[in-house]
Image (tube, rainbow, N blue to C red; front, side, top):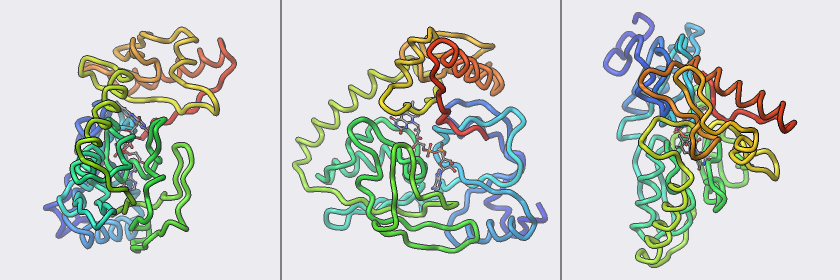
Length: 292
Ligand SMILES: Cc1cc2nc3c(=O)[nH]c(=O)nc-3n(C[C@H](O)[C@H](O)[C@H](O)COP(=O)(O)OP(=O)(O)OC[C@H]3O[C@@H](n4cnc5c(N)ncnc54)[C@H](O)[C@@H]3O)c2cc1C
């Protein structure tokens, strides 16, 4: 731990990453840090840079599959309260990058601020959602984002304003090391009406998710003009099992893992999904899940 001398209170060695991800599989992080302030975060990055150690940021782990052999270098987790603040400023909501997206959506609705409800049911953090412009058919997070404070890989803090921001389907210009805060522009609406709308959207979202409380991950992007889940179903993949990993019986774009699954089971299953869809339908699906 020589490299993190003085930061031992926030850094651990060989931390298992499975509990921090939705699929609950994979190996350890060589080092794992939960900084309690931006200063500590910057110091961690500087130490890594001095020693040429790789570093990366983990949000809620809902779009990450960690390999069985684990991750080299430092994995940073913005779990401290300082990174999860949520406050209103008129019709704007200013939130920390580590805040859970679900808390942000419910806070907005409680405050009578409309615009984020289409994101209901998407797991993970605000930072992860902005990194991949998470969304549903009802809209994506980028539509409401007017500002973001980011920390670059060289340890500088910058503010990105609306004119600098670019969002497309599961793509965002916010590809810096860390999104520290984001500001959303919303509209005043009756909280009771908003709550009703949120509940309806939540029912629709839930109906599309695998049931039974298993560990799941959404695997492929929708190809232009098509739906990945429908294509995978058409290719006969629903319910397919490889090792201890399975394609969901309910939505073929989700893989399901159990306590005995390994990351390599899931990787072999994902490869099978890709090749079978290509062989049977001539469609090449692009993996959305990040493989670490
Ligand atoms: C059951 C289920 C349902 C899902 N439904 C949807 C859906 O409807 N729509 C959708 O778009 N996605 C969906 N997803 C995918 C996933 O929830 C989103 O991609 C989510 O936004 C990822 O956020 P996260 O915090 O979990 O990021 P992680 O998985 O932890 O990380 C993903 C990427 O974001 C980066 N990142 C994380 N935090 C930050 C930060 N603060 N600053 C900079 N970069 C950061 C990471 O470095 C990594 O590159 C679903 C996933 C599951 C398991």
